[in-house]
Image 1 (cartoon, rainbow, N blue to C red):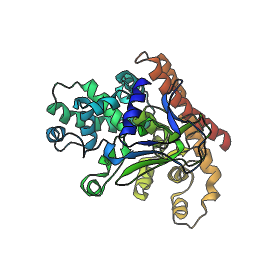
Image 2 (image 1 turned 90 degrees about the vertical axis):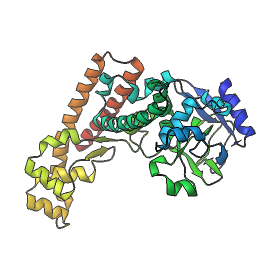
Image 3 (image 1 turned 45 degrees about the horizontal axis):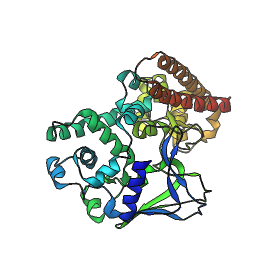
Image 4 (image 1 turned 30 degrees about the vertical axis):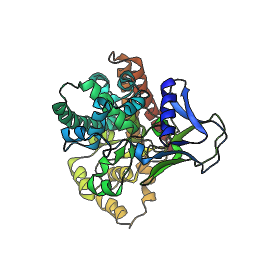
Length: 373
């Protein structure tokens, strides 16, 4: 906490306004922001001047020259590694350690554990790995003495702690994925789907309460409308079952084999092949449309798509097909959990994180099956 107090003192001297909140250690969860007094809704609790944001605009010119053409993500991560300015050192002292990041981020896990990720999480991880590989290739060429481990640590920090931000200049000059900055103090907030609102303009970043808080209660911000697979791969955690209203499961691995080549082409031509999702409320329309093709003659199926037949007429038959899919999914989940229990790679924290994700998926599947039955 001494490092955080030094950062807070530095931040206040440089214009950061902190009202009624402060960082506190949370058992088993690192650092979070809690209310230091009772707070009302719509209170501005944190304001960070734009001048303190770590952005492409104030990254040392030498780093930018060395990494000409690199992504902003790559440049900000490199600056965390090679910029020796005292201000950045104060900030760097409160960031999660390399061991912390290695434990929670699947990209840093052993390959045997990565293979046991749920299908949607594994697809996200593959994209993330390709993105990191491109950034690392450019950075390692510019800084040959920098180790991959040190850079991966910094790259994860930027990936998981950056904020969306644009200016009149960057909005036109940079692609959307490069509209990112780092900012002190604000990056200590944890995530909740119902967190405080975050806004920015050319001069400042502001975090505002959306509801009242009693003294001692943790405050959150919302990182985005993300499933637990996304949260696990990009941020290194998942939310407990029932807390994440955006959580969902991809059913593609359990449905694709149900369709003949002819039916597959029918779905492809109609734009309904793949991306079949299940959330806590229902299977998505794409899923129901695909399963309906297993229940109906082609002409009748097309009549539903054309609005000439009420889709509710076939709801019972679609639900029966969905139950079959969910039983396959439940069986696969049980198998993966058993494989995970036998896996000796990594450490127990990594395995526990992955096990939680599979069990969240199981709960969603079992709950839906009970509702359908």
